[in-house]
Image (cartoon, rainbow over all chains, first blue to last red; front, side, top):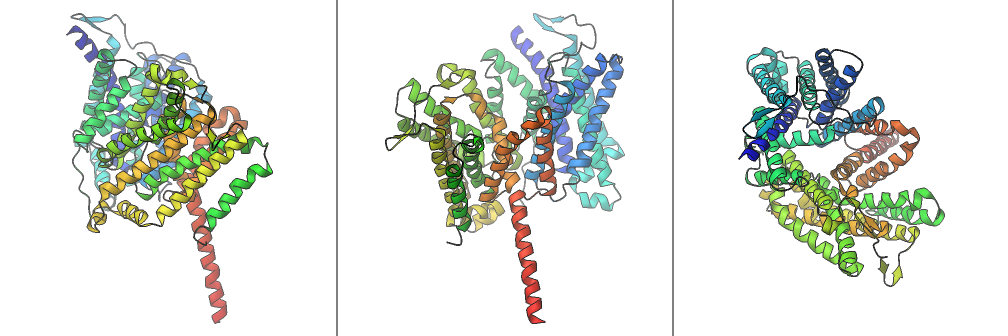
Length: 290
Length: 323
């Protein structure tokens, strides 16, 4: 029982990170129909720039803020210089463009930060908290609470604010949105910036627990994609749910079966879910127009 | 003759190159990678380009072929050809059983499922070390002989790979122009419309999935024997993505597009080595630029351009003749 609780805590921590990445995926997917395979790179850029700004002597909170800003800028540039010019691109082509972008960003990170492994200090004093016989680090709490807070903010943003609703309008029908006076281009930029910022937060939150290298974004991005699909592509809350489930399945699988096979177990569960529910847990079945 | 003219010219170039430059590094070393990648890209294009079903796990079948050859020859002492047959049998069963539930999925969900399949197989290669040798892989594969002739030099391997690649290309070209190929493009266009025309879409998709997996499997066996060695690295999800990139870069749905894409992506890293640390960055940039400006793919874009110019010239001639 205690063991299960322990797995649950670690699973929820990893799952929170996946949830943030998946949320970023689904925001971009909703706004522009693009599956952004460079999403993991936002996480890496956020974490790495925070690490190096801290090293340069910038105070911790400011470094985090600047890191999020850096990543958001990269997101804006991605939209402006890679997605927007590709007007004739099909879905598969845009996937390859974002793969190209992720390789490009990884190449840039390699040049700037090198191949070494880095970590961030925990946000606050890191004495373990005991719950029964399970332990939890304050940083785990930061990750969970930070994610919960952001999910609520994002939900509020899309449900209540004008800009959020405008982005949603673009996702339903770009032409109609344009006709009612929404600046579609700006909305797309905002979506990319927001998604990159969320990725950066995920990176900063997780960097004190796991380590960061220039290539760490790939696996995180992949897991985020899985979480988004598991929850139902395009459904933001589904993405969050998918992330949490993926994180828990992974840690429980790693704990009870084998840590080497933990990714295989996670993917196996996803495949099973898809075989029985081909449009994800919260996804609506798609109706094909003939 | 005219339909396959491009194929004959291509075969001629492929087979003459090693005769002209038997000791050239780019022919006998890089060339082997190029040839195997072309076979894989062409087989993936059958599924992606013709039938419109994305697969991010093609490297899994390539890997299963390679590992079957390694395991059955070294651990169980079978002859190379028996091992290849076993590999084909395993891949056939696996792809056949998985094809229906997987291909029921569409779009991003299909991408996800095939990605998962690829990753699970790769993890199996890394983790099941009693069978697969773990991260270190298996080395010391016996030499492959064809009708008693041992294939023991890179130049001989070139011809084996080239022959295999040309057969794959020829099959792919012929499938496109056959009844099955038209059924596939109907499925690509609209599954419901295809069903209305009386096409059993599930069967058509499942068949091409199995067929393309089997080609990848043979390619894997040949690759394993040529390298004398298998390790999980060669069959990771990165390689699956690379294969998809080859197909899209050259031009989705065009056999020679896949050929061109595979050629470029195999040669490019060799050429970019001179940039050292900038290699990855430039590679990503080239990929992005090509896809942004030529979304239909390099080969298809150039082909369309030539057709367009020819048409313009023809128009001019007609105008001149009539005036």
